[in-house]
Amino acid sequence: MDAILFFGFSAILLSAAIGVVIARNPVHSALFLVTTMVTMSVFFLMQDAPLVAIVQIVVYASAIVVLFLFVIMLLGVDRHESLDDGRRFQRPAAAILGVLALAGLLSLTVGHWQLGGHRLSGRSISDNGDNVRPLARTLFTHFAWPFEVTAVLLVIAVVGSVVLARRSSRPAPNPDAANPLQQGSAR
Amino acid sequence: MTHLVAIVDPLMHTFAKSGFSWSFLFVVIIKVLIAFVLLLVGVMVYIWGMRKWIADMQNRIGPDNAGPHGVLQTLADGIKLFFKEQTMPDSADRVVFRIAPYLSILPAFLMFCVVPVGGTVSILGHKTFLQVAELPFGAMWILACSGVGVYGVMLAGWSSGSKYPLLGSVRASAQLLSYEAAFGLGILGALVHAGTLSTREIVNLQAWSGIGSIFRDWYWFPAIVAFVIFLIAAVAETNHPPFDLVEAEQELVGGFHTEYSGIRFAIFFLAEFMNLITMSAVATTLFLGGPNGPMLWPSRLGAHGVINVWLMPVFWFGAKVITLLFGTVWLRASLPRLRYDQLMSFGWKYLIELAILWVMVEIAIEVANVQSWNRGVAALIAVVAGAGLYGILMLCVPKPGEVVEEFR
Image 1 (cartoon, rainbow over the protein chains, first blue to last red):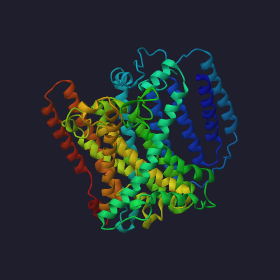
Image 2 (cartoon, each protein chain N blue to C red):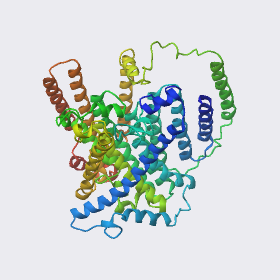
Image 3 (cartoon, rainbow over the protein chains, first blue to last red):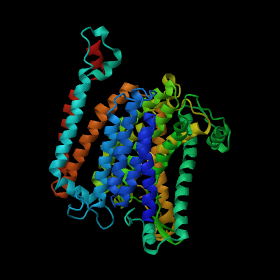
Image 4 (cartoon, one colour):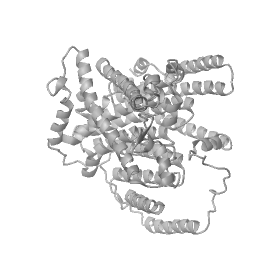
């Protein structure tokens, strides 16, 4: 049962991932990306991590990729990007880097886990399969400082982007020249 | 994979213990089918009821030809749309154009799956909850489904390959994204009190214990601001008036569904009304105690009789949902559509700040509860501090007229 689910969803995940790369239309790429995100959450479920699974859907499928799509649609979607970008060295470099990355991943899978994972102590799942409480407790006790620092970082990012976006829309010296469309967003 | 779904539902418990059986599969399929049919029939009756109610409010008669009091009007419209020709523009993206309607109807149904409709019943000897699926993260599931619902509208407009649908869908997805935050914070208002993500547990925590439960145990009163914010955001998320800018006819022809016809067009409307019913059901679950309510004559009919196990919970659930749905009809009849800038400034400048501050106030009260401080004093301090902060924030927000003055 586990094996069937694992290989079935792996097939979906990998074909969608390939679809992200080879689709000509950016909107199709984004749709394939959603498929990979949702399929990935099934794997989290299989790892007994229901909260991570649902957060995967809430954050990636329903927020981040929606924003991708939004930006793609705002910036004009009918432009099919040309795949020849004229820089000759990129393809061989990409091939070499790809092989290196694959080798690294394979060595990680074949060898034992060297990077975290099993080093975390404590149970992550309570008896009835609910791992919200243990996760929350860990997050707000052991990892309270990194958690808060990340929150501050995100706030800085938001404020920074607002500042950057505002600078370009300062009103022109002559009020009549100001674009009336910008009135709402300028302040 | 033993914990794939936490074994809370007694049905899953028997499944985990005694393995697969055909009657188990049958119970699961029956539950899914009944939920789906219930939603479809609900939409049919709701549309009829909405037209009748609005007609009453406007001194009209409303539909009255098809069936008694016109109750079959929606069915007739559906059959007509089913047999109509389906057109597709040449410039459309054919695959995406076809799947977009289903992308908008699927989340509406999936969201309903975690809503508890009744208590624990037994079907074919299997004890089970009267809800399609009991997930340990039900509240997050609601949030995920409402977020994924954006895709249907967005892709429908884009794939039509013409201007008005694209404008309509960009505008619609901006609206849905903007109110998503307030929606989530509204849900959080109930979760702070419940301390769990499971919809079944949230409902159980709001159990009926006399008439005082309405104010004491149901979360709408302790979390009154979150409840109101949730309702507003839910109306905006379902593109219902006064937030129906998505289909502002005079500006956008038909918005994202301009190019759709026939059954695909019908599916969009089905999804919209299904969403409305689902949102009412979610509000009932989170804030109004779900299926909890007084039993009917427990001394004579028995607390575990058929009537009090099957009928009364479903009755209370339905009554609460219908009350909320009547509210949406009332809104539709009385409020004019917002302008787009009003929609955005209301969502971003007032609603989200209020929601965040209210959640903080609630958390403060909840902490006072746990630490057994004086509850009244803590609540007073928290509310005053929250209101003060909100006032300071509002001083920073420019008034709509002010902005226009500055640039004129």
